[in-house]
Length: 342
Image (tube, rainbow, N blue to C red; front, side):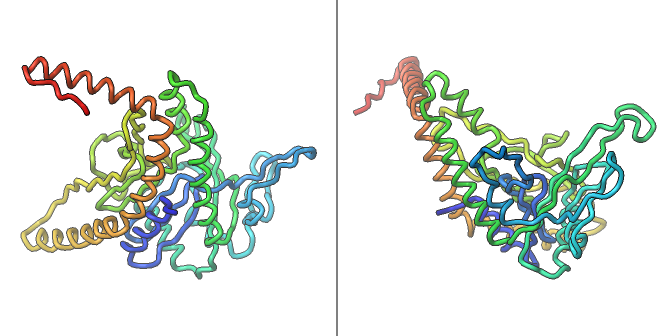
C-alpha cells in the first residue's frame, strides 16, 4: 500500500545532507533538515479525551502509547507554566513557539532541525500543541498582539508513530467513502467539497529551491501571490492555500512542483557563475529525488483518484454528457461533420 507520508520521508531523506529529524507541531508532522522540510497535515491527536464513565470508548492509541513530556504545571492559576520531564527541554525548545507569535520561517525550521540533529537520537518523536489568545495593548496600543502558549507535549516511539500516521491515511479515505455513501445526486458536489475540505491528507515539501505538494495544488499562504519565497518569509500552520479539486473532473489529484523564482544580486561574473553552478546542482538533486520517488506519490494519488471517481461518478458522467453536447454544437457551427460515438 502506498502512503503520502512515505513519499515525503523518502524525498527528504534523499535531498538532505544528514538524517532528517521529525516532530509534530499543532497537528502536522514535520520532516526537516538543513535543506528544507516536509509537512504532513494528518498528524496524531495530542489531547486526552474526556470520556464519560458509562462509555465504552477508549483513548486513541497515540495517547495510550505515548507519555506526557509535562511533569506538572507550576505557577499562578492564571499563569501556569509547564515543568518538563528531565532531559526534555532540549528536545522541545527548538519546536515550541515563543509567547508572541505562532508563525515561522524556513530559516527557523532549518535551525530547529539542526539543533535537534545535534541531540542524541533516542528513537522518539515529540508532539506539541499550542493555544493562543488575543492580547489587546500588549505593546501599548490596541489590537497589537497575541499570547501563544503550550497546551500539550507528548513523547512517542517514532516508528509506531509513523505506523499510526499511515493507518490514519487509510481511515481518512474510508471516512470519505462512508460519509459520501447515500448522498443524493443533486447534493454530491456540495457534500464532497464539505467532506474533503479539511480531511484530505495534504503534504508539502519546501526548500529554498522548490515547493512540492500533493494530492492538491495550492500557493503559499501570504500576501504575495507569486511563485517566489525567501528563507525569512513567515508562514502560519497552513503554509499552503490549497485549491479544491473539481468535483466533476475525473482523477483530479496529483503532484504540483513549483520552482522558486529567485532574485539574486551578483557583483561579478565569477560570483554569478559559481552561484548558478551551486544552485543548479542542488536543484537537480532535489528534482531527481522527486522523480525517483514519484511512483509512491502516483500510487497514493491513484487510491484517492479511484475513490473520487467512484463517489463522484454521477457528476463526472453528467459533465461528460454536457461537454459532448457542447462539442457537437461547435462542430455544427464550424460546418464540420458531427463525430458519432460507437
